[in-house]
Image (cartoon, rainbow, N blue to C red; front, side, top):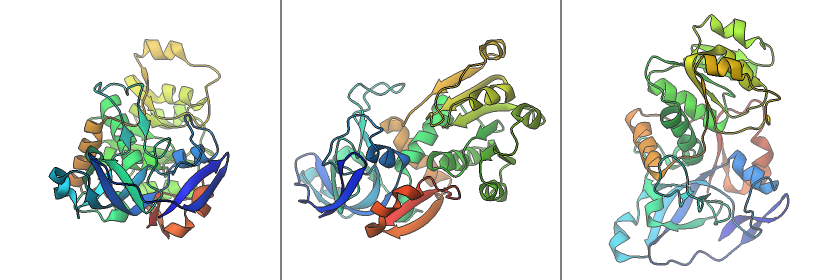
Length: 330
């Protein structure tokens, strides 16, 4: 089968590799669609732990179950499924186990024509989505769902600010918060993305490259109950200034690095919380799929490309005007 393999630091190549051998407790999924994540690019660049050269990349995928390793699981054969990329989250819903990892490194992932997974790693595709849309869900959808609801405690009517609109997780946070009745605001470094967010119903959208006085700008909106962020850096202090008392900042990344300082005075006086999160439990994955189905949410897809273009598309993940996931038809 054809697969995209990490062969060295910064090096990926197409290889013909053996199709995975079916085993008890496993399902063989014929991959029909995949999506690209920043995680895939970080692994390619050597910026991720537990890298294994010779491994197949990819965490997002959807397809059709072709075979089951146990006769009792034959009911899955022929079903359209989405793959849960969690491996060994563990029994604690609050934090992942020490064994936790994610499909696509070091375990072989979805960037191949077939993927062998444990039987409990698949769920039926949400009925209103096609396989291309479903493939965009796993990593970004799960991360956003946990950040908003378990960590952020979002309820209807609250003001929520989502930074970096257009990114994989941020677009799901936007859609999920809207569906839950939140009053959603966004930031972006692109005027085109700002305009798109407003067209999609954002209560406010701001280009952070032009409007840097967060405090004066957003205090007129009554302040925010919740901020969802992936960048970190010094803008954390700007978010602190615009939170309501008892507000929360939930961050799932730190692409801008550490803040030079942290406004602890304002944090303790206003009873603010700064909360980290990553991915989510298997329970949250299943709840995320139910939420998507209930509210008929359709992922934002930036483009649909042939599988053969995957290796050449890694550089497009960070294109400034990209909105949503880059999806590939296998």
